[in-house]
Amino acid sequence: MKFPLTRMRRLRKSPEVRSIIQETRLNKDDLIQPIFIKEGLKNDIKEPIKTMPDEYRYSIDDGVLFGKKLEEKGLKSAIIFGMPITSTKDKLGSPAYDKNGIAQKTIRKLKEETNLLVISDVCLCQYTNHGHCGVLGEDKVLNDKTLKYLSKVAVSHAESGADIVAPSDMMDGRVLAIREGLDKNGFEDVLIMSYSAKYASSFYYPFRDAVSSTPSFGDRKTYQMDPSNAREAIREAELDLTEGADILMIKPALAYLDIIKALRDNFNLPIATYNVSGEYSMLKNGIEQGYLTEDVIMETLISIKRAGADLIISHFTKDVLNKL
Image (tube, rainbow, N blue to C red):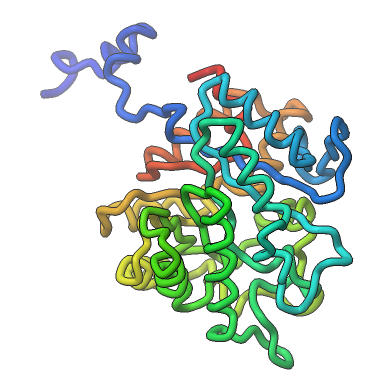
């Protein structure tokens, strides 16, 4: 039917009407808060992250307290990123799988003192002295040799109480290696949230500053995906599915809404995405400078949900819990 019988504005005439016909809704359960934990940082001294406004590095105690405060506002899950003391880093990233490492101690304390669902980042980059996500051989990352170390990291996180492990390294075969390691050690119920389509993106710069994980040489383009490629994301997700992934993730989010939609259309697994540091800092700075209003935060998160994401890791989580 055409105008005047059909008037689309009738569906927008009041907040009440707009609310009852709203197609996409963002819930507190959809959001995951990243928490940065730095080894050696004193309690009550949270360390500002220069490239990420209103984001901080925390000691274990302060990070857990931060999680508790967000839990009181309705937060259901958090993802933990550990930063070891620089002098302990080595070529194998051994602090990443140390049972008394920074991530492991944080996971244990969170599980003891909160009801949060705890997700752990599984990677080597912030634990190696070269900043790459795997073991090096001469001038390249050795994919297959890296797998056993990623499995060790995941198992150590599961032993500490992690509910979900999230491999972010982009090595081929790592989901299978981690699944076999978890199952062999009695952690069949620990989920794997795989960074299935992780692109070699410039939007990661503030995160690398936050956790001191910038590669000492070269880049990560030999293992992270080319931003030009979309079909490749389907292949990556298919492989992770066959290897035992429980949740598929796309990273970043805003510049890759088409990839979120593609995975949503092609797979029945839960779809997660990471609204990454550069996306966060870009909007935060726009708000602080008066170029944007805070309404852009919810608009951004809704756009990600509308594209098909079930779960959204976002540094904006802390900002919007009170609004949901």
